[in-house]
Each structure stands twice: as structure tokens, then as C-alpha cells.
Image 1 (cartoon, protein in one colour):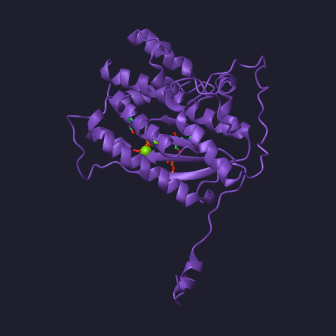
Image 2: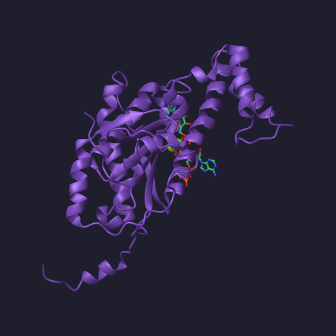
Length: 299
Ligand code: ATP
Ligand code: ATP
Ligand code: MG
Ligand code: MG
């Protein structure tokens, strides 16, 4: 292609390559889903169809992008994680984020009618998602990021479950329920961010409504973890905190090496799990997630 005198405009484009050898997390979040969920009458506090749809769209994203090693979803958000070795789009942030957001949104809309057969999508209530990429420099910090999202899921779900019980079963107004959950705050050391400490909410649930929070479904309590299934490993006899949390000092992989790894990853099934990702156990049994080296396919 011949150069034209207009070529110089390309120089205005800013580079946005993400730091090498770092974990890349692309987190997407539904725009205005509070309103969106009202419009399509999501069940409160947790609409199972909506969560299943989020997960189904995320599975397709994982399948289309074999570079992804794990994803975590809760409510209207999903975090997609690329390994420090990832070279997709030369690690250009905008490319990675927009590809994930648009692929996810495409599948969310495509699959909508499967999960909401009697309520078709109607403008202006169409789903859209924002997205951003954040890099994390070590396995330990990546795991802290994942733990942060899962703790957030727990805090929000316990609050929402209690709040909606007080409203739907207890006949309280939204403001009264909110007020009561806030009032517990006074005189309590608050180690959780949203008003009451968790013990109080467990107590309200049990004493007033006979609900043992522990018996709630894991998908609500723990969120959804997506990863490729290889043969599980026996956890090392490592004690808590002894997992290798160091940064990953691998050199740059060649293109053919990357293509080989992609092929192996594509062969593995993407599974949706609702398990603890804060403790070591999850990561020890699935060493391929942090190492980036595909394991053996399960028999
Ligand atoms: P923003 O555009 O700033 O993200 P938002 O309205 O999407 O605003 P969020 O903080 O992202 O606000 O919260 C998402 C909201 O979507 C939740 O508070 C909840 O009301 C609703 N929601 C999402 N998923 C579900 C679900 N599975 N069941 C019921 N409600 C849901
Ligand atoms: P933005 O306008 O930049 O999109 P946001 O409100 O969407 O801001 P995010 O950074 O996307 O914020 O965070 C998503 C979720 O993470 C929030 O709904 C909130 O539950 C939680 N969150 C964000 N920051 C904190 C924090 N400092 N502590 C606890 N939870 C947080
Ligand atoms: Mg949102
Ligand atoms: Mg959200």
C-alpha cells in the first residue's frame, strides 16, 4: 500500500500496551442493571436465569479466547483473567477490553431468549457492559484480587438476602428494612462495609425467617468460577500460605509455542463452578491456572 500524505494522522494514536509479565484482568460490568433487572422483573435478590445467562455468555468468551485462564462472575459483572505470558493483541489494552466486552454482549443478547423465553429484549432496555483492564504483578496479588471479588459477593449477598426477606416475607418497607440494617451499625465494630456485621444478618435470617444462610445455594454465596478442566492434582501437603505466590519470571514465548498451548487449552472443557477461591485448596488442585501450563485432559 502506497503512503499517502494523510498517513501522519496515525501518529496521533496513543500506545496502550500493558506491562509485560503481569496478570491482566478485564472486568466488565452491566450498565444500569438495577433498572434493567427491574424492567425484566428479575427475581430478588437473585434471579437464577440472569446468573445462568451471564455464565453462559462468559463460557463462550472463554471458548473464543483460549488465552483466558480463569473468569469469575457475580451479579452483573465478570472478571476475565489473562496469564502473564499472554501475548494476545500484543497486550494492547483497548483491543483486549473491547473484544471481551463485545463478544460477551453479543452472546448475552444471542442467548437471552433461551433464559427469558417469555420476555423478549426491547429497546431502550438493551444490555450493555463497560470494561477495563487492570494489571497485577504477582500471583499473590492476582489471588487477592479474586478474593476481593468473592468477599464482595458474600457481603452483598448476605445483605441482599436479609434485606429482601425483611421486605418480601417480613412485610417491611424498603426504607424500614434499610434503616434497620443500618442501625445495627451503631456500637458495633464494623469489619464489613455495609452497616451490620455479618453475625447480625445471619441472626435476623434465622430467628425471623428460619433461614440458615449456610444452606443458601453456592451460586449465590460464592459466585461463579469458570476455568478449563484438566486432571485435578492432589493438594500438596503445603500449609496455608505456602503456595508459590511469587511473580512469574517466564521469558517471552515464541508464536509457535503460544499456538501449541492455545490448541491444548481449546481441547479442555470450560466448567462453571461455585467454590471457594480464597483458600489455597482451589489453586493447588488446579495448578494449570496459575502456571499457564495445560494439564492432562481428564479420562
Ligand atoms: P452501573 O451502571 O453503575 O454498573 P448498575 O445499576 O448496573 O449501575 P451495579 O452496582 O452494577 O449497578 O449493580 C447491579 C444491579 O443489578 C444489582 O444491584 C441488582 O439490582 C441487579 N442485578 C444484577 N444481577 C442480578 C440478578 N441475577 N438477580 C437480581 N438482580 C440482579
Ligand atoms: P466506575 O464508575 O469507575 O465504573 P464502579 O462503581 O463501577 O465505578 P467498580 O470499580 O467497577 O466501581 O467496582 C465494582 C464493584 O466493586 C462495586 O459495585 C462495589 O461493590 C465494589 N467495590 C468497588 N470499590 C470498592 C471498595 N473500595 N471496597 C469495596 N468494594 C468495592
Ligand atoms: Mg452494573
Ligand atoms: Mg455490578
